Image 1: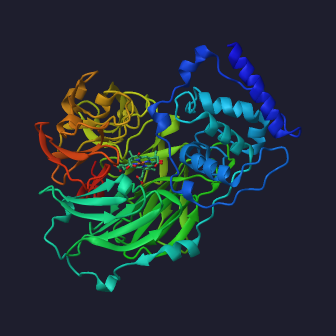
Image 2: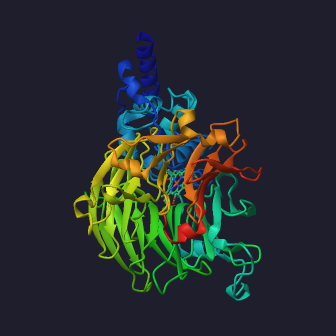
Length: 587
Ligand code: DHE
């Protein structure tokens, strides 16, 4: 204890020296040792955006201010890199706050160097990771970060039409593309598999399970979506690069590409009748904007900023990120979720010159979501608020905001099934605990259950990211790849839908990691995806970049191992997108 106190005084003295007289320095607030148990880092705390592209972006170092510790060029570059990798996801690019607190200089300077060092070292029970005591950051780096935070943040560049257009490339012009499908592949049963750390996708034939192609895409590639006809596949990387692949070509390959910002996570295509394959849209984390593009060439047509007011307190937010985007089947509209301000924008693409946007007040921290089984209602998690917002895409209205009963819902696009008692329900699991929540989605025949959590039961544990079923399946599959227990992270819980009539349905554990035959690594098992027929489900066994990974295929009827795909080209497989299920929103 005494040693701690001496250390604090020394640091405070040092801080006073560094800061000079112009800025007040608060005493360090180290948590009491008994409280430190609450300062751990959970799976949900770790699963925060890492702005890996922006960390390498060249930015100008803001000028030094008298009384504030100056950073050398090299120190600034290092601190900036760490900030974008580890801090910006929660505290924002401009440090104005997101799920984490604002770290603008009027706040950091008031708290002082010592406080910042203590906070970064120990974290907080509110979700700030304990970077120091976990051993994830060295004392020197923590000191550097605390000094960095006392200085003004740099401002990364904008990405307007000139920059977007400059990045746009048509690789094969429309006139030179085939007029009909030129290959014998059943393209509806192709799986586009994210190879996260190699910046590629693998196109795998659903029948033969053979890799058809490996295609270079964006950095830390994230998701794939498919045009309404099933012809064009759109892949987006975290570097905001979209690669458009023509599945009709003799050898499917890229036909256009574009970069819509510096950091992005979502892409979608128009699905309303009469607009099939007409437009694509992508949403960026930085700059905060969405971009509507031509659906055949990716020519950028319209860029719309999402900067604006929070839906509740109506305060200006300079960088609300675009999270999930979904295409409506009821209107020529895209549903664009704006994370930090909590708006769901229904963007009418029928007239881009006179753009009409229905702006729905939903909830802050919108993240991922999908449609109900009828395709009419959009359910999206406001994850840090432990809620799900429901939008009626036909009436363009918010229908409900529902507490899920668990901590940090993470549905992916969710799972739709017919419950033996409650009728049609949509399911989400949670990052923060083992809760699986079922929400009634039929306001006509099961009115009293609609938009309520009708049942919760327990899965294997927290750290779950995705749930999955299929209209033909009798099962619900729940992953838990971020669970700290290695066995839980490498297996899947399966529930029988008919057992859900019981209060606490039991689950069966499928040891997918073990079935893969891989013995090294954590073998995180992530994101089940059905084949077109709905009789088998594919799981990724996601290991480190230098380790072996695999895809394990399970027979849905028998729950037995059916096939393992192993190939040295399968580097860090994560998301898998079956063409038919993705274009038809079957999940
Ligand atoms: Fe994702 C979907 C954001 C980390 C795999 N992820 C999404 C969506 C968003 C998002 C906004 C919804 C897109 C849509 O529907 O339009 N993801 C983020 C992050 O901000 C986060 C937390 C951190 C980051 O820096 O990116 C993040 N995501 C991950 C991963 O680490 C995962 C597990 C592995 C990977 O490949 O990166 C991952 N995210 C996925 C997948 C989907 C997804 C597979 C699509 C699921 C689906 O069924 O549609």
